[in-house]
Image (cartoon, rainbow over all chains, first blue to last red; front, side, top):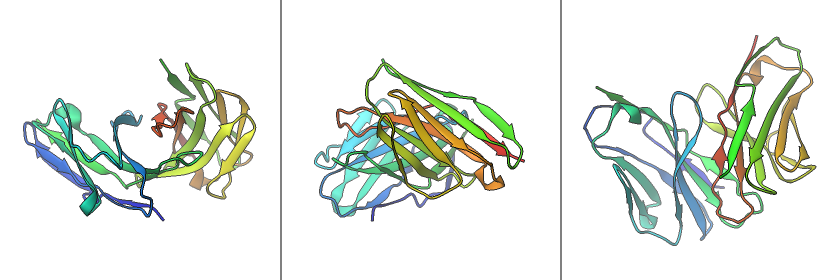
Length: 116
Length: 113
């Protein structure tokens, strides 16, 4: 069975600090997708990134960066120079690639609070 | 571009009353559709998914049911609500081009009293 673990329940930082959110996954599949979603106080889940299991290149998008390491089954998310607007719950998720319905397995989420 | 709508945004219902939550998607055809519930503990639980009109699969046995009467419409229902049905209900869609990315709607916050 697939499993996603986000060991950090809550993280609190001061604005402009860098913060890394950890995600460790378990799967027997050789092909899969990994995702990060952001859930601001409004509640809607906002898609941030998808990573194919064959693509281990790190990715940077503005202040966001993602580090995917198959050897350690981790897909960590770093926010550089955090801002108050980054305060949200962040979810890591795993999908079996190629299933007819693409079931997502979510981690329990990490609550990030950025203080001014 | 694709958009997904859910209504109502919030709902307060007494125990034993019926429920109908609606989700519609615009700008895409034949999407996969999903209903999730997020309880107070933050985790997301997949309730139902649909790969086409009239096709519903249930992930978890419960007091709820789902229907897909039209290609881009997904409805979550209950005949008699329980206190444990309270939560945040999210609808999501995924395109048939298998990018596997699910996009979520704004959600419905349901409180059963």
